[in-house]
Length: 505
Image (cartoon, rainbow, N blue to C red; front, side):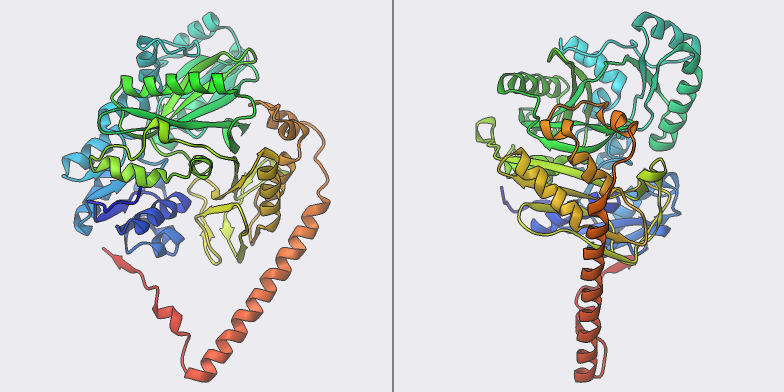
């Protein structure tokens, strides 16, 4: 898939691990990268990794990473050809996509028209109903008033699910079990949606009990011809937020997989989709599946698809954005082995998963066969309180599911983040749940496990001790190397001058 890119310079309109991940592929393609950062992200890895970096405002996202007009202004000043939005922030903002194109730049994502059709959950439901794609029963459109919500909930029957029409990532979602909870649930869902996406539009669906959450990765070329790249199992969730994802799903056979893939491609082609996207489904206990939503962007969990397909989705995004046909056809897609990903959060599972911002004193990340780490932090970096607390993702590939699971457990055991609390031990416990080992889990499994007495963690102490030993040995080696260098040259270490990064505007 390696070709010479027409695009020469790209602004990555994001932060954290996804900004670093996108920049890496761009660098592989010989494309220069421009980063943007808020005041709290001055020394963030995504800033240091870019060829240029520009300050865009204070820490709150509405004053920095969500300021589309300012980001476009910076893009023009930096002389870029295109903007890649990553995921979150402005990635599913159709008005921003249109504004990028209107400014004479390339938007590395779907066109605004397709984004409007599928990015809004309510519009997507309408489009899928017309395309005869099965959808979860729900409201015909956005909920305008509390009385409307009561009428729809009564028709559907409790429990119901309130969902933000814009965005994703579990933000703006509330399960309502009875009418007495509806008013507060609606208020909370709207508030969270407004803060996360700048849009408080909410709609309602019937809550399906204990479903599997299965998504299909698709890629569409400029001719809207679509290829599906397998499914991802995303049912290990806490409060609608995915924690562990894997491919292939242990609950999907080849026949169901093919049917879901065909429906996902039809859904994308119905709206003239271009680029990478994910069509999400709920699968009930009878293996009937229902369209849930489409994420018109790259997903957090895309690394597991890349590990099993041997493809770089960001590279494919770039080629499609420059008007080239897809570099592969459906018959070319080959999937091998099994991959599992875990999300590392700066949070404390022992205290109701409270976010734990703070300064990372030392960081040790796993290595070895079959391990991929996408990380957005570094030693000395202060994890801010203003953004999602996910700081890294660890994905492992194995010949089969248990091989990948054991590798991921090993990789999490090698991970140490000194200075803040993370969920790594909690993730290892989830990998050891009998339901997960057997592949017999659903979207409520994590919540059920949390209701039981917390598991003892004898391995955790050993892992931390090992990690601490590694950290101390590394620091001793660094100090010794600096002493030798200073003694020989009489000045500071020469490598400091080799990786300079520039700051503009």
